[in-house]
Length: 279
Length: 297
View 1 (cartoon, each protein chain N blue to C red):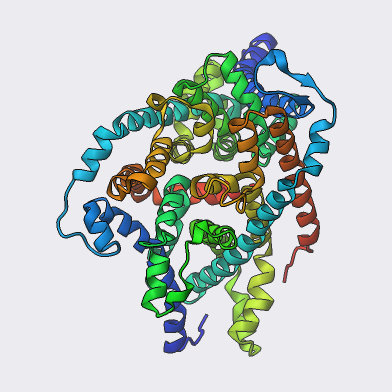
View 2 (view 1 turned 180 degrees about the vertical axis):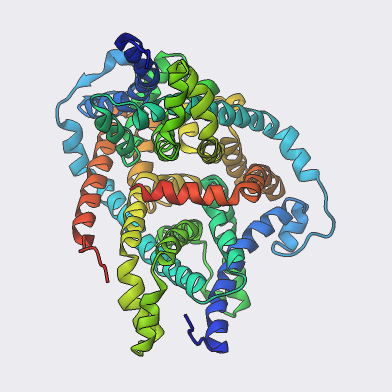
């Protein structure tokens, strides 16, 4: 295709692109810089470079605002939640994709349509269910809730990955006398590793970022996840004006996501667009 | 296959039953139970739940805040659809068809806010809107428009519109990429043919690109509707908590306040049913209006 695009057209198109890049990058960059500024500096020069890089805000957030505990809680919830999701989703995805049984389509549709149902309604009964199970205000309870909430998405992505594995491998293994459990564990799971990794990264980002369920299902400060701790600091900041500490805690929250994005950019993008397109 | 029927069923049960039980317990049961609770007057302790029939629904229809919350939700839906779709379509076309060298850079940057936590986005934007330190007011003053500055999130008229920008900011990347996926699937030969016929870029966009990415546009719009009606309360909770003077309350944040702040769990569940019903109706209506014969050339 030979389309003539004038020099000026290209410049004209680039202006909005550059402006939007600035609109995205500048606040993020500035938040990171703000984390290294003293409060006085933030007031004097909120949008410029810091005079010197000090880690005082990070130390303050880490020790005076119990960010250390909430980072630990978030790590547990994220890791455990992602693991639980896999334990539940892999066998079901395999059965839905490969095994023939009555109600297969129905069950698949049930899981998929749960992606479109607003869960807010369910959160009230879930609150009391967790209370009865002694899992309210408990990070393990939250991890279970998270894991189940990401089941539909995970099953959806995993079934489509498993559909690409050639059936002949399983058949050959079955003829050799391998049990179906072993086939699932030794053949299917390793071969769908790409899908498993994609799903796990997506779920981990989701759990690490999640705020509202944590707000409802956790109560004591010792159990706060990072999102709740930051929200808490943010509410305090209205009175203490310790913006630097707030920015430091935001940076702590965002750095793991930036690292994951830097490594797995393609997978994350693919996972999210496909997850949305299922519609 | 040396497998008895029993073994086969056992394996099937192993694969399906534990997962389904968890799903039923933590997703299906709460949803149906929420519907059930909506017929009770209930402040939390199980002994005091009182069946009140449709009382909560009557209260819902006479509650003065409810119409405002619904309007706020749909205001966000409409403004987000307009803002996101126009920008995302423009960026998607620019990045796929203009052969811009640094396109991957824009793709990576624009998408990043999509994976940021709503808490981080909300707080970041609270600072951008900060009356004395924020970027918006400083920018206006820099441009000599000092009289336009205001406490954006504290102003009853401006608080809700101020929530649109962060949502658009955070949402663009995903939809841009979905549209780019659609555009890159369009065969180049259509554009070549159009070129020979003398169609200009604008005509090509309206006659080729837009009809052929319609499926992606449709999915994007539905996705914005669903995620807004089911999730707008998160950014509201972080940034304004429904204030000032209920000016930004959406259905979900009002549910949260009624149920988990005021302990009116029955009434909260009723609001939840309303959210569910409205989302389903909206999606069905939009699907009807956006249905189009699949375009093939």
